[in-house]
Image 1 (cartoon, rainbow, N blue to C red):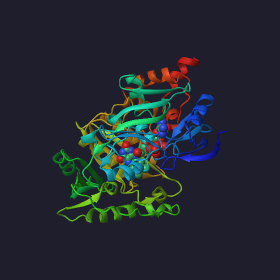
Image 2: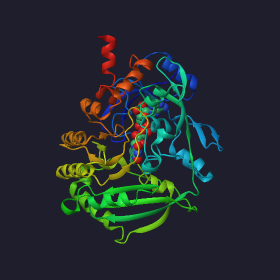
Image 3: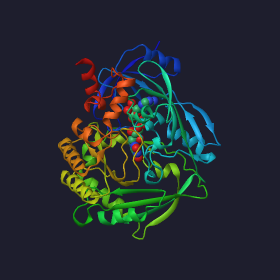
Image 4: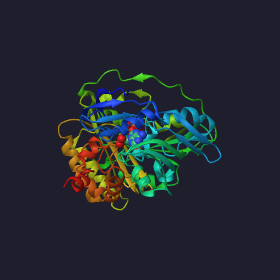
Length: 451
Ligand SMILES: Cc1cc2nc3c(=O)[nH]c(=O)nc-3n(C[C@H](O)[C@H](O)[C@H](O)COP(=O)(O)OP(=O)(O)OC[C@H]3O[C@@H](n4cnc5c(N)ncnc54)[C@H](O)[C@@H]3O)c2cc1C
């Protein structure tokens, strides 16, 4: 018998919140039984590191937590491929494979994300320009679809279903196995160079100059204005030839929700100024472990509590390189006017389009920023959506909780192809999330079926 537990479910931003029935199956047979029982709506859930409602069941719906489905099933060192259950996390892979010289090819900013979640959002890392996103490295998946059947899907057997499943937000079914390529690395470390950058023009020029870097990422002071608009710190990194002593994992936790004044505009401005000056004017270079470089926030458990019980939203967009500077300027000015941005703001360059129908990545500049949940934040997000639409860019669904259905349809041109696959593998729309309802992803299918 499956144990269902009624729980409040939120994404990492802790807004919105829903009540749903959650099960944590441990075995394939149990998972098959749940799906074959035909109750719905259902949603696969990973580590809930998506910020908004992408990983949230619909109110009163059912969530299938994959965290117990966490076995590594096969590893082929000749081909460099690995087959895992969906609940395996990047932290698991770092722990077992980094000491043997293997690393996942595209890794998000938190190692707590699961491989199932990484596939379903086609996640990217600080090496997107060089290595593409997660889906580019996937060889095949096993998918349990709404009809209760397991299918192995690869680029030959059903390329459209694979493209719908990569970045497919869990809407084609629950992924039960993922086979993907790992990359060989010479050590557990990268050589990291950090440089202060004065403003937006200089930032974009510095990214251009660092085009050949394996990793590049910018921290941006989203509250700087005038001549300093867009100032920040550029980090570039290359794999190091020799390892460094792994830093013992720190066990710090934010124990309670902080009061809202902890993240006021004044304290953020002070923090940002200090953070920027922390890097010497001439820059600095040092060796750090790969996990420390890729996941700087993972050492502080439950850091999302710094925004208080009311939570926060994350906005992440990508705008094409052409006209990108003007669009970034408009976005930063709009955020600056609002005045409530957090210190967590990131600028990166993407090099490649993702392979999924709903993949986020495309060549261009990507800007990500946390916004405490305060009066005026939804209006700000509306204004940012309009700027992104004008620029011909798109908003990242893994981070979103506010995008309009209309804006979504304009940003994701392969939506109809995605819907055509859903019409084939889930015509009744059994797999649903808060996000899929908000964005009306199933609406035309439901109209076609029910008139
Ligand atoms: C601190 C932090 C930094 C981050 N940095 C980045 C970054 O640099 N790049 C980036 O791309 N993202 C980043 N993210 C976002 C995060 O990587 C993605 O949201 C990722 O999908 C989270 O994985 P998860 O296991 O938590 O999945 P969840 O958030 O639980 O679910 C995400 C989606 O995956 C689906 N899903 C989960 N498991 C399965 C399965 N077995 N089968 C089918 N569908 C499934 C869910 O239905 C949902 O649609 C970051 C998040 C945090 C908190």
